[in-house]
View 1 (tube, rainbow, N blue to C red):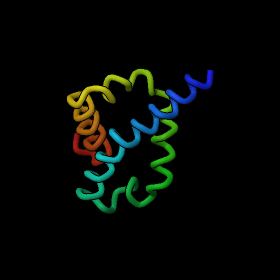
View 2 (cartoon, rainbow, N blue to C red):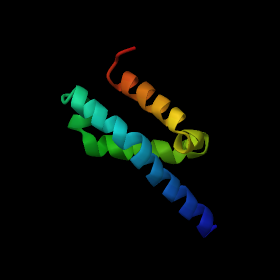
View 3 (cartoon, one colour):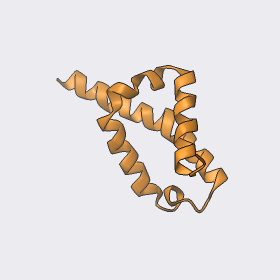
View 4 (cartoon, rainbow, N blue to C red):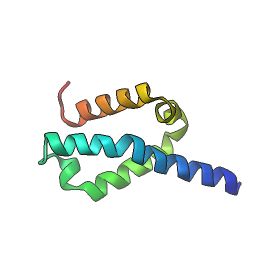
Length: 83
């Protein structure tokens, strides 16, 4: 059981570093007044909890650069209300 917990926690941390942080930097450069930037700690915890819930379906985006980039583009478009 401890191996599963270690895998899960490391997967969530990897998702935060590989998927959320690049998106956060793009949003910060594009719109510094965005609520995600203003309330960065709350947004970080919400994303952490969200990644804990959807880690298994999110695994292909962690392993593939193409899917990771697609996730970031979609996430930034949604956060910046561009579509």
